[in-house]
Image 1 (cartoon, rainbow, N blue to C red):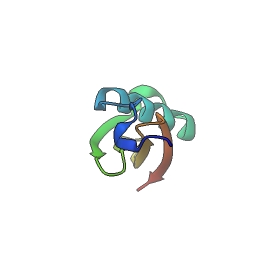
Image 2: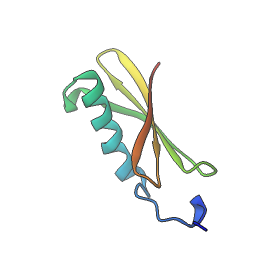
Image 3: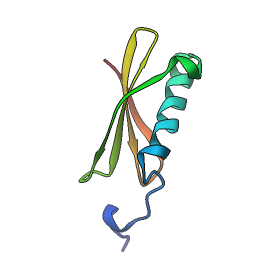
Image 4: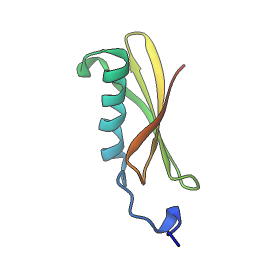
Length: 79
């Protein structure tokens, strides 16, 4: 039996670890420079264990969803 999300060690425990991963995902997907990407908002979902980071770049905005246990990006949605 494997432990639930609440019992597993998170690879993205804080906002400080989540933001660089989100920025790197935007850089790879949209081919922008790191200094063009600005953090707009961050939010952690306690129930799902996911980080949501809103970023702005080149007149665009995107929300990056990341799994805090796996330490991986699960979705990038442009808004």
